[in-house]
Length: 416
Image (cartoon, rainbow, N blue to C red; front, side, top):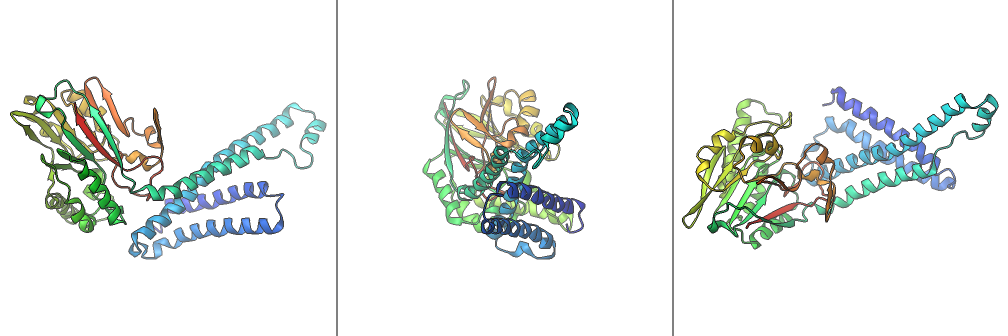
């Protein structure tokens, strides 16, 4: 990492961004007293330089050995500062473009005397409004990210009644709890995680379905939480699938054999939890004399950088004889890419993966997140014809140790 050109490009960009933002801070504080200016400038540069120095020395220290909560918090603060400055700089750049256009117009369309008069003294000044608007926008973003630290364990129960014409009568009223993206490697508060599991059990579901990303990278990340998640049980069972993070694709392994062994350990973890891991296969669920099909596949992503380990053709074999079919597929992009066009008889698809980007806005009748510009289906219920897709917002978190606007989700689905 220390020799990566990309790493040094990021550092240079951070320095340039700090200098650019500082020019605006100087402008909007020009009427302040000398002592206020000294405090403001000192705080700004101490924080900014500390962030850059931290990233410079990071490759030379064993930072990964520090407590997880410390690592996550420091990275989140640095990332929050960076993106806050980027957002603020958008407004500053708009103002600079305005000033540039005004300056060029003064040169081209006014006489020399008029042009000189126009740019006498302070010249074309910055807009106080845009400068403050940029500072408020950037500060608001940073404040939101700090506030979001406290939301990462605020599990939200989302109740959904889903109507299908072809649900067998015995299965009407079936209560399914759907969870996804546990990411146990990110957890730092075991009691808070246990509280979420208790919320699930309090719903008394008939069936629990988990749609992948049990860990961030390594099977051993589940060690501390085996006793928590092994408490999950339901009369019709707990079934699970794999997500893109479960394969260990985002961490360095000394050999292909080591990576394969990690995946085998993770598969064994599902069994020890009492969960039935579906690896491109189907099981039948029975109530009375009636049956439905539950299909689970490995990760299959339509986006180029995500792997296609799943084999729906193999998993679907024999499913046509069942009147109602549920598919567990981690990545929601699978729905438009293969499920809907090739398997129109699959009634309900359950996915996760996006986390709602852990950042966005959700109010009655409106939801927004930057992730929607990448994923058409990114959170909640989607319907096309007789088929439905539900995208769970994720139980855990990864990267940013928090949630802003998009809370961790436990979905309670009732078939009606």
